Image (cartoon, rainbow over the protein chains, first blue to last red):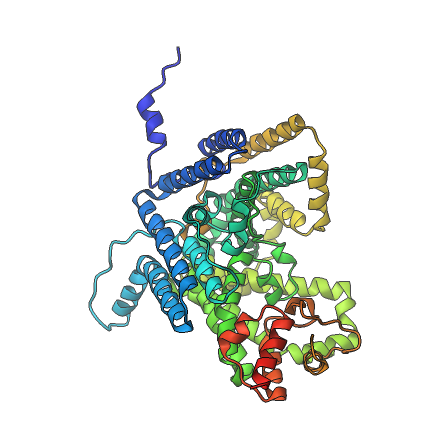
Length: 498
Length: 79
């Protein structure tokens, strides 16, 4: 007889602040497969299917955030009624009142939980007043679901969509578990119509979902977690103990880690969503292939960058259009400082955002001369020049992430100092010898990233033609492979903290 | 219908040859080469100047294709 302690099993389903139900954990995989089986059994009844999905979503959020589940429910109720109120308002003034109410409610809660202590600390640091920090815990995913809800409100205001009259549909949009904790920040205008569609998956969609989930697990667990624990973290903890060449490899390694961590999460979220019959927004499109910083932001965290483009940059830019170039630049700088601030309440994130704002502003200022130069020398058609642009863009991005990752500003400066004054290129050979698996993973990570995107499409087509048993074997193999490399504990996703 | 005048303003602003570019009511900004989010404001300013009109911010933001932009201009000019 195998003794099972049922009280322990019960505990698995309770909120534990140190153990959110991560994608990739065995409990999640088990529950998700169970959900899929029930989901397919009741596929014919749309109501039952959606109800099950809502209950499961609420459970996942409760498991990660406990009592803050109530805040999420409040968010859904409030925004549903703000949206409806706006839709029913007869005048532009009436609409504006609901817009202001919604902005105050959503941004107020976000600001309270995420930014209060930052401002208190600033008041203390600048000796403006004598305050004490509050004991605040940030509800997981609040930055993501607040922005999701706001897109609904703003799209109604901009007349991109009509408010939905179904509270159930809106509730599922806000609480949908695949993207609740870390995005993609989906738009209601795309998500809501999918709820009432018949549940049907083509072979191609199943293959694509499996591919996304497998790639996501490999990116997150095999690459991101491994290189961070075994190399990147060590360097960033004490940059001065390492040579410049190791620091630069850690900078490149961190760029890859952040990409694999976050896009890995997005891939799994999109794959899981697809298996449930929902197409979520694309979030990454080979960002390191970008040839300029503006190109990079069309490929990196697309759901956030397009959100800020639509609801912050465009209104600012149109409002400031009489200033011509200065208006454009002001709108860019403000938007990117907000990008930084969205990531976290710290000076480092603000600086990181500002840096990207400055990159973009410089790009705008040299736009005219650049176009003439490229035309004159036919540079746009040159592959070598294209590679050069990719290299420069990648370095600008990777070095900006130093401020994102470094423990504090001084240690970020240390990274740069080591690279400039203590490079020691000879150490590279030693590094490859002593950190062989790390080096191989970094190399493979970038190698797969730079393969033509048709490679991925071909793999999906191939997978879709396979028998379901072969697909299951491949999935099992990948999960097995991932668990072999998995380092002790599954590391929380970096973007959970935002 | 998109007027030749509007088409010419857009093409001039983007250094395009208006004879080779197709712009109709349904055309959206990203479909026109070079019409990106950065120079969107320049195009709006050029239109305002040329037609001698002034748009409200929200009116511009609500335009989701060139047809909507044309209707906005028409509504201002006929006033």
